[in-house]
Length: 281
Image (cartoon, rainbow, N blue to C red; front, side, top):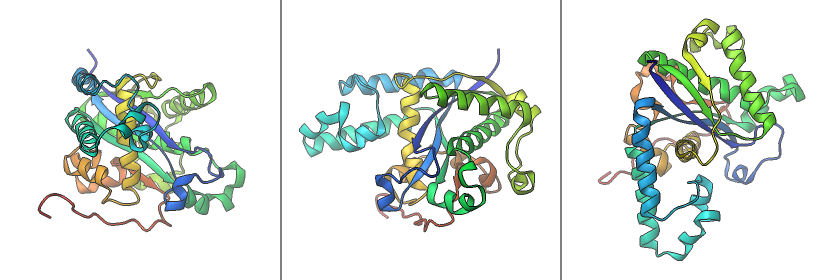
């Protein structure tokens, strides 16, 4: 039997570098990201059980969609009718479910203004869609983690539309055929995997719908990882890091640059430092 590490990944933000900035840009945060959670095949049933029991406790019958939960809209509009105590209990129970699930968060987050500053003058409209960079980088780092465990990697992105699903399938096939698409003179320091190594490691690509509990966990993990690139003191990111739920928490210091979550093109971002807000600090 093959030992398999499952990589469930969601996206966040706009894929086109030249797309008009969204609402986040007004607050100095404008990103595109792909990432989510890694879970061993043999541990997935436990993660699904925790998800199912959380939904039963709160009578949730819709997917756990991070943006709707934060804004208390859509399927979570009912939270506005609850007391502050009930709201706090819901959010805390949600976090406990995320913490107890046997998963690790990993992503590639690209700052869009930084990406345009670095590449637009050089490449103009020939710049890659951001999903190509984010998918290949996050997948390669997940593959490195799988290889370190002696596992193969199954890649399970959230299903989007036909063109975007086909694009990811193309990037996946290219990695197996030719390896990482970046220039070797600039990417060598990241110790990229070769095409044969990808061939040995990648098990299958299987898109999943938002109804998948594991895709919902990927969604819940991705937003804190994105925000953590701009401010390490953001409470959801801080808690995940303190509780050892991010890939960085299981890596040695010399592995972080080529195996941890990648924050790309953050040159223009004044990243706010870690602020310990734990009790007693």
